Image (cartoon, rainbow, N blue to C red):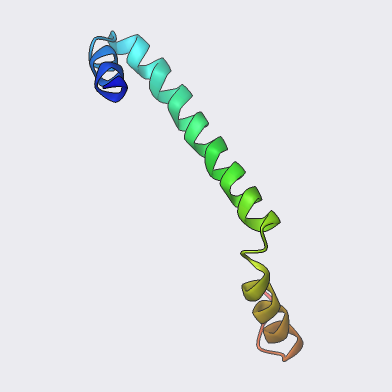
Length: 65
C-alpha cells in the first residue's frame, strides 16, 4: 500500500519538483549500489574472481593498455 501512495505522490509533483526528485533518486540509487558493492566485498564475494585475475596477471595473460 505504501508504494502505491508514493507513486501517487510522485505523479502529483510539478515538473520542477519531479526534476529535483529524479536527481535525488539517482544519487540515492547510486549510493545504494556503492553500499551493496562494499557489503559484497566485505562478505568475500569477489575473492574468487580477484584470485583468478591475479593468476591471469601473474601468468602473463594481461597486456599493458
